[in-house]
Structures are given as C-alpha cells and as structure tokens.
Amino acid sequence: MKLNKLSLKWKLFFAVIIFALVIVCIFIVFQIGMLGNFYRTRKIKKTTALVNKVSNIVASHEAVEFSQKIEVDGVVSELDKLSADEEIAIYLITDISNFASNEQDEHAPSTTKTEIINNGWVYKTYQGESYSKLGYQTIRKIREQAEKLELKNFYAVILNAPDPTIDDYVQVFDTQMPKKKLQKILASQTKTVMCCSFVDLVDGTDCLLIIDNKLVPVDAAVNTMKLQLMYITLIVIVLATMIAILLSKYISKPISKLNSTAKLMAAGNYDVVFEGNGYLEVNELNKTLNNTVSELKKTETLRRELMANVSHDLRTPLTMIMGYAEMMRDIPGENSPENLKIIIDEVDRLNVLVNDMLDLSKLSANTAVMHPQIFCVTDNLIEIVDRIQKFNENQGTNIKLQYDQNVEVCADESKIEQVICNFIYNAINYSSPSSLIRVVQEVNGDVVRISVIDEGIGIKEEDLKVIWERYYRVDKAHKRSSKGSGLGLSIVKGILECHKFKYGVSSKVGEGSTFWFEMPIYKEKE
Image 1 (cartoon, rainbow, N blue to C red):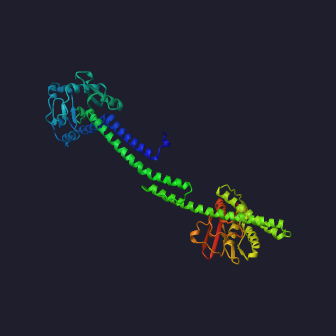
Image 2 (cartoon, rainbow, N blue to C red; image 1 turned 30 degrees about the vertical axis):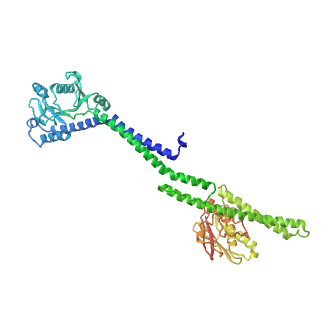
Image 3 (cartoon, rainbow, N blue to C red; image 1 turned 45 degrees about the vertical axis):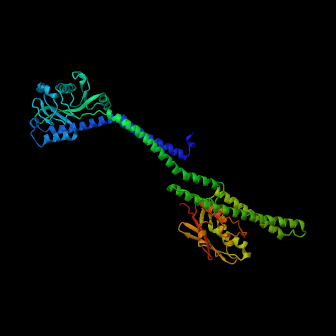
C-alpha cells in the first residue's frame, strides 16, 4: 500500500508508533550502548579538573605542612574535605626510594581517612576501604614511565593483569592523547584510571600528585537496564498503540464527516450544514465552509434569476423583431419607416445585451485587455452627457454636468466611457422621469473624481456591499431596462479593478445614490 493512499487515521497511527519506537531506540543506544563511554568520559573529565585544583592548592605550601599535618590556611582540612566530598583518593609522593621498605604495609586495610608517612609519603588521603593503597611497584612504574616519556600531566591506567609484575600492569598516557584511543583502552577490562601531575612545592620539593577516582564496572547495571528496557519497550508500544488509535479517531472522524458533507455540496446540494467539533481547526473550517455554502446558495439563486431575466431580455427583442418583420411581410402598407425603426432599435438593444455579456465574461476570466492612452476626460463627459440627454429627452430626463477645468488622464478611453455610461443609465433606470441627474467632475490634488448623483429610490445599507456582484439586482422583481443590459455595475467593477482605480457608492433609501470613481491626473514629465 502506497503512503499517499493511506487515510489520515492510519498515517497518524503509524506516526505515533514510529515515534514511540524511535524514542525507545534512542534510550537503548544512550543507556546501554553508550553508558560506559559516557561514564568513563565524565569520570576522567572530573578527575582532570580535580588534579588542576589540588595542584594549585598544594603548590603554594611546604612538604612539612602535609607530612606533619600542620594547618596553614586550612589546607590539610581542605584536602580531607575534598576527598570526602568527591569520594576520591589523593596521593602526594616524593622520592620513591625512601619508602621501599614500607612495601609490606601497602596492602594492609585502611582504617583511617588520612595517613601521614614520613618515609617518602608526603601526604595521602582516601575514602573508606574501596580504595586499596598504592604499592611500591605500582608507584615506581608510574613515575618511571612518566619520567621516561617526559610527561608532566598524564593518566595512569592499572590493568586487570593476572600478575602485578607484568610490565603492562601499569601504563601511562599523555592527557593530550585522542579521547577515542583512551576510551578504547579503558573499555578493555580496566581496573582503575588515575590522573597524575608533577608538582613543585614552595620549598622546592618535587612531588608526584595522584588522584584516584575509581571506575565502577557498569556491566551489571547495563544487564539490569536491558531487562528493564525490554519491559519498558513493551509498555511503551502498548501505550503508543492505544494513544495512536484514540488520537487518529479523534482527529480523522470530524474530517471524514466534513468530507462526506462536502461531497453533497459538490453535487449541487447547497442546503447542507457542516457539523463537527473536536478541536479549533475543525470548528474554524466548519464556519468557513458554512459561510461558503451560504454564499454559493446566494450566488446560485442570483444566477438563476439573472439567467431568467437575461433570457427574457433576449426573447423580447427577438419576438418584437420577428413580429414586426412578419407583419411587414404579410400586411400590405406596414413596410413603413416607423416599423423599420422599431426593428433597428430592438436589434441595437439585443446587440448591447450580447456585448455586455461578452464583456462581463472576459472581465470575470481576467482576459480583458486594456489599452491605456492619454485623453481629456472632461471632453468625454461633455460628449456623453449631451448624447444621452438627447436620446432620453422625450422621457423628460434632465442630466446636468458640473466641472471647473479640463482634466487629462491615462486610461482605456472606450472602457472609461463605458463606465460613465453605465453609471448614468443606472441612475436613469432607478429615477423618476423628471428627476435631476448630476454628473460632477472634481479635482482633488493629483486625482480627479467622477460622480453620478441621482434622486432615485436609493439603496438599502445592507445592499451596498453586494450591488457590484455579477448576479445581484436591487429590485428583485425584474423589469426591462430602458437602456442597458442590467449587467452594468458588474462590468464597471471589472473595468475599474483592471485599471486599479478606486470606486464606491453612497446611498440612502428614498433620497438617491452617488456612484463615483477616481483616476490619477496625467501630468507631462518635465
């Protein structure tokens, strides 16, 4: 089964299971596979820091202060406390030849935390019986190997050799050696690792400082953790499975419900209601889809109304053309100029309707092409107002143009003329025959505003936002327009938005409406 064919429920299920397994694998790698390395690295890093700290402490004191436990600035107590707090053994050793005779005592159990030995030992302290005392052979090998390699700061590694007399029983390594190489050595059955440094005391005594931070074997802990991790893995998988099932149902169920409802909407059923809850995103999607359904329902209703109205407007001129043509053919004497004029007028009306429908279709599909040019919009207003006034003078229409100067703009002249005509015809259609229609040109800075003001029926406030829609009509009861197709405002909106010009309308019911648009004034570049 391909991943893109899996449902959301199964994708969520597998995602949670895989996530749980990845977490378990990471836990296994770090807690079992890398536990030893992490533990040894931390121990060595901490012990190295302690060597530097103790070196700084003892370097400013004399050997006698440590050998006779003379408290100067509390240094002996400080070392005792450091040994107790950090659980480490601290050795400060001078010439090893002085205490060779004491080798027999080196394997006696420790009974005190601090031992002072004057024959070679300057100072040593260690915690409890977990630290065995360093023997003469061990110390001799550590010092000899360090001096041979000319090391000041180094690690001393005591291996689990069957016989302490073997040369490889003790090995020293520079602290600058690669960490990976040191880890490899420590991982091979190492008994202990010590951090060492040669320190010159203030009285000139050359001492070897050894700090033993004992390495505890982690094999037993790892074996225990393996058993624990086996149970933890089973528990995590069971819990992850339960969570994955619940989570996938919780997330996918409302989405599946929305999908089923959306299929009904796609089939043309706009009476559906999107229901579903569970989380914020689904609730927001429900609101959005319900708003979409509501708008689609309105659009579909308006589209049907428009189709019925346009069909009526198309049939009416065709019927009249056919009727008058048949009358002129069949009845002698009816072939008169008056009847021919009626036929021509209806053809013109039909032509306007078809052209408007084509214009609206192009604007809606963003395929309309604008041809901007420089022209005097004032001259256009004068010509348009004069033409429409003469055409409608029999109806008593009174159109008045107001302007104070000639203005040039850069736009598609024919489209701007179409906008102005649509505004004026819209005002004529919704005004009484004797009312005044004012066409006003106003210059505001770098912008010219063209307004068409009527004294018609006005527009309700809730309708102002939707009158520009392609299927919207203010009057629901269709009547045949005296001029125009009834698609004018939708065409106006498309033309002005293509030019990126501002436009708008203000209106009050019973007082009339004001339709306007603005264009930038053209100014020649100096």
